[in-house]
Image (cartoon, rainbow, N blue to C red):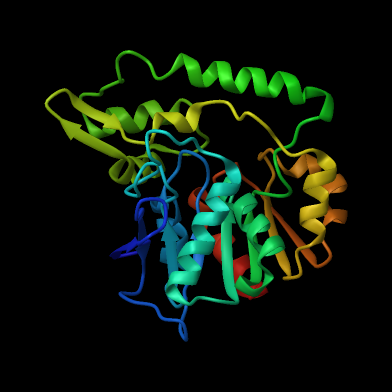
Length: 283
């Protein structure tokens, strides 16, 4: 992915700028990209290993707002899950993209699923990489979810932002909460950090770490999945969090193909050649 693209969504949320990585310099309504959506606290660079294995396909990996090089939400806003769906819809409408193949990892897969359910004209095919269904909560937890979400927001960010002496040190800090190697962590760090006189710091909007004030129930999540008309390929990692839910969730999709591979949650980075082989065969 050698091309950095920027999209200014004029008139939309104060003309928000979205950043992306692509393996083509331009796309059009008649020649749209395969749209790649990353996971929570990752960025577009998480698709670099996969893109190197899918060079023949037109790929565009988006930075969600608050991640990578895309703009943060305004100071009076928060990060609601469905707002990311709206961001993608706004981008597709601006670019005239329809009937896309959408590849989503983890949270990006959930955004892609909601997109395919509510806007079927935008999604022709859906690839979920270690993602299936949605993060849900029991109805009885609604009150506590609201309380803890608001408490989290009112605490605000830490008084001092963590800084590291080098890019490698920042990447090593990410390793402590990930399932990949330093090589993959550096890809994310190169795009997701900033450097100043104090050192290197991760640049994701801290508000992404606040607890959600609400979550879907299982019934709502199932209703969304059942509305997905596009064929779906789910590539589930043996050590990922979604494989254990397969028996329950596979009945939520009308046209689901499941492939399982050995590895962890970021299998599109650590086992890119195998994930690419499965995607190419399915497409």
